[in-house]
Length: 247
Image (tube, rainbow, N blue to C red; front, side, top):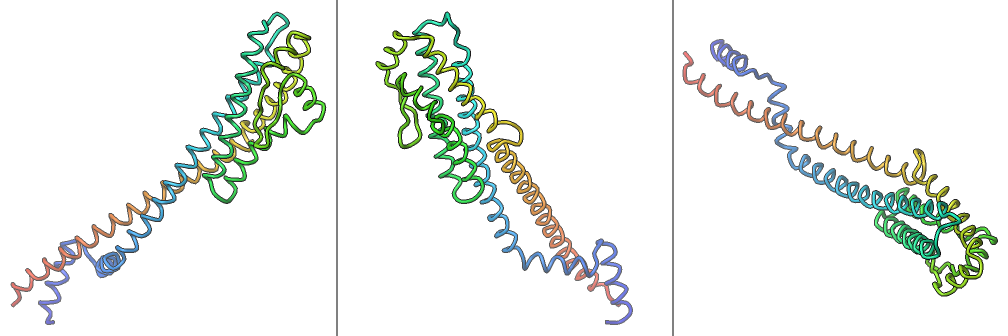
């Protein structure tokens, strides 16, 4: 290359805003496009899993919250509450409690192995322990028709419950108020900031945010590679045109 060739080449590079580093980046990114695609798929897979786990834990959080509200309702029963109202509140509590147990199990199975699965299992186990650990509580519940199945769910013998209401309605309300308070306390601990369920939801939300940032960073890198490749091609075409004017 003579001096005129050199000047022409340098002028073209300057005019097109290119340098040897840009050309190197372009070649590197062209060669690494498969790596970009692989990284994009891997991150998207993690995003999908995390989003699904967040949705599942959202359902668990809602189920525990519903159980808490039903437990509070038991504690709100007054001396003037009718037997029908007491029975309705009790059946609502049983339904909410059992739904939370089922949701905890399904969330745990969906989350697979690891901290998220353990968190979901713990939520269900904590609720079950609330109604089963204390022998006095178990006996009191049994006397008014409650029993705990092997899967951790509560069942209510309606006839036995109604008979207990007829025999001593105040004793029934006292037992319900006690168990309602215990379950309310457990649910509060699960849902509180720093609690088991809330911690997991927060952790999954942070992971989703990190993955979103990674996707944005990867997209920016891909755009940079595309721009560099485009500029490199423009340089090559421009330099060829300058070559036709050499002296």
